[in-house]
Image (cartoon, rainbow, N blue to C red; front, side, top):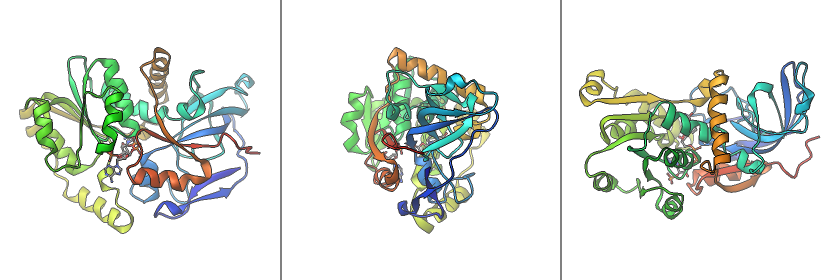
Length: 344
Ligand SMILES: NC(=O)c1ccc[n+]([C@@H]2O[C@H](COP(=O)([O-])OP(=O)(O)OC[C@H]3O[C@@H](n4cnc5c(N)ncnc54)[C@H](OP(=O)(O)O)[C@@H]3O)[C@@H](O)[C@H]2O)c1
């Protein structure tokens, strides 16, 4: 079977297809024929050597897949064979087949094709944890969603709307009409120097109850100033530091060294809360992850979870998929499709 592998850090051309032996499921495991794999910004950071805690090279990235169970290991009910499933993966999703523990898979909702199902796990779990589990957002509150046009951003709009909260989102301007059509209440171009004046007008100088910030240390400090009393800041990414090559590594090192610390006295005086979220670091907390994923799958049935697939690339064109995101062209999810392949 084929996998898309990163052997050396660098630009998108580092993604190369290699042939490997078909993995056999061990006890308690099953093997999925992957039909679609989600592409995430984290995959790009790993490729560039900027992702803390990334797997050693050579590695296969990919945090989420949808596919069909084709083999089970000892102790797993063969009834699973032939079932369509989706899963959060411990990397390795850019692969024609994937072996994982049986308790990691959930049935794919019938109403979603594999491409849309692969758009769900990481983005929606991240949004759920940020808004519901840690962010405690309520119906009478307002959330600022940075990077609202990305996969997590669109998922966060869905979850916030489900809660009945008001949403303000930042994104490149070409994405604004689409975001508004998805129900975002107000879109801001955060690449304009004066975007905070618009934010201040929209919030009448009162700030918001929650900011979701995947941009990085400089933005986190700024986001704290956008909170009203009892506001919370959720930090979950470093997109702003994603420069290519050595520049990216220097950016990352400099940003981490010079990052201002959050002083407890400042938080106490300001009545503000901060939290961090990294879903991958919770990979072993499977009961929680499956509970949250279950809530999201229920949302598919109820109609408020609406995964939006922007573009589907052939599995072997992962390089083009990464470039598409790096050029900020995606609105919502980018997917690698293996649907037309015979992995054996
Ligand atoms: N902690 C976690 O568990 C977790 C889980 C999932 C994702 N994340 C993080 O959340 C963020 C979004 O991920 P995603 O997968 O939803 O993104 P995505 O779908 O890949 O979208 C990426 C978007 O980010 C913006 N972008 C691209 N390059 C950028 C740069 N250099 N600086 C700032 N923005 C840039 C662009 O949109 P605009 O220019 O229109 O904004 C781009 O379309 C990433 O930082 C990712 O690492 C964290």
